[in-house]
Image (cartoon, rainbow, N blue to C red; front, side, top):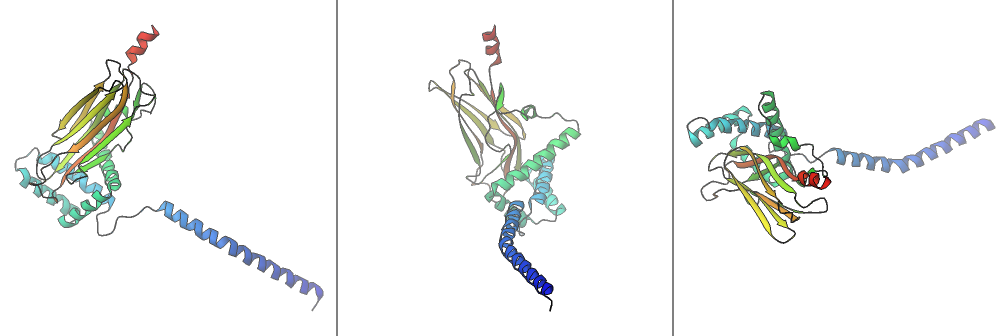
Length: 286
């Protein structure tokens, strides 16, 4: 064998050793990268025994239509039950599967909120397509967290409350910072939609302000129907704001209504707005 051939084979063998070493180094890294990508890209799926999020959004949307129609015709709960059964039949879902699916989503409130956000968007789009007036809440949709009019809501803009405790109430507490001025007004507003199979539509929203001088002011509005609701508190005496508190609660008589009965309050376009007193600014500038 010639010397050049021997030398060539040694070079090839050396290259193979280097490649194997590199493969041993990069293979674990590549595997880890693929695992991380798959974990980031895939969110936990809804177990197959429950209705998935997409189908649940469609069902709840149809329930909204059913609820609106049942309020306009005679028959009360019997009419509602018949319409509810027709919705489930349309989507090929049994009452038992719907009930267990709702129980699952109550335990995963983030998923339920996302479902209702889709329902609310669809209802809003349908209203606009039919030329209906859009809620004044949308005026505040693009408000930033600074400026004369600013959004100070720190939670999700869509919530779902149910008759089962503790899912029937949502509270919030906001500490006022230097962005709040004396004379500011606070506006709390939302779109409320009831889905009540049995029992009464009864909820309340409340707003409370604690001023710098330790005095307080409160405002409470009762909710009895699907509509837009708002309440406002002012600092007309320029005492300065220290805290803004509030709540949303779904009231229901659990003793007379079965736990499996559909009894929901769906809230969308939730806005908590801080409004500077621009009139005071104009007076100072003069």
